[in-house]
Length: 285
Ligand SMILES: Nc1nc2c(ncn2[C@@H]2O[C@H](COP(=O)(O)OP(=O)(O)OP(=O)(O)O)[C@@H](O)[C@H]2O)c(=O)[nH]1
Ligand SMILES: [Mg+2]
Ligand SMILES: [Zn+2]
Image 1 (tube, protein in one colour):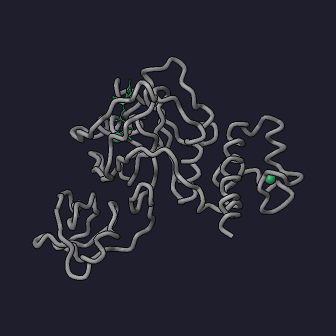
Image 2 (spheres, helix red, strand yellow; image 1 turned 90 degrees about the vertical axis):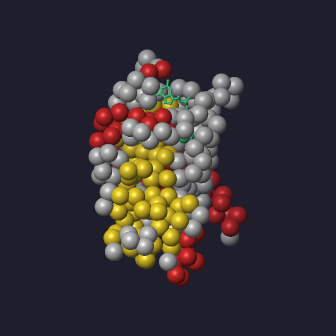
Image 3 (cartoon, helix red, strand yellow; image 1 turned 90 degrees about the horizontal axis):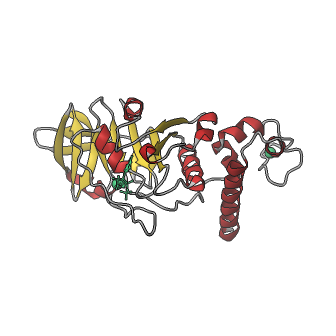
């Protein structure tokens, strides 16, 4: 028996990486009933001679969009232009990743198309940021180093260059890359399925289909502030425990906002999400 990681599922079969080899395994016995529950990233025990999955090992983390198990970090990819960065969407993804208990890396791609890249705020907030070009290869090495030995997943809108970047990082990956519509300034959802790819340096990374909107409804209003590092650091100084940094008096976040120490755009994102979650909760009860 060997222990391996599921790279992808195709019908009733799993592609499993174990000891550096890929095995295409059937599920054995009662496990057949659980085939839909298996995700890329799941750790399994296989019988390598019979090419069967014998056991599914306990999972640490489950992401549902994209559906992957045991991810450790998410690389949020934006393009500096074509399509232009959507900061609200970046903040939404940062919240989702933080709420899942994972680390975010931010990759600003298409560096070759702009003179003065934006996004410096996020490095100042403490996020690890990368400026890359899949066209010229600029900035690819530091990103590759950040992926080595870990299970990562790429996320971001359609057309920002997730597949193009992975083709640079993994020679021979040959992922399909699609043109950005000139009229709509967005991608065409070229990537359709989720699959983990082994990295030359060790570790696994998933290319994922771009998505445009993701719900934050599972996040509690009182947890939202913890997903904004600059607000989490101030929350202890708010007068009320559980302060939502909105209408409460003596709120350290709002005071810092007035002094210009909390970025106004980030605070706007926070309020958009807070109101979205609160209106969902009002409907529910
Ligand atoms: N100039 C330039 N173009 C890039 C860069 N990266 C990607 N592109 C182009 O952007 C377009 C979209 O790239 P993809 O890699 O398919 O984007 P994606 O994020 O995988 O999109 P989906 O699979 O639809 O989610 C293609 O035309 C790429 O050639 C870059 O760094 N510079
Ligand atoms: Mg793609
Ligand atoms: Zn507050």
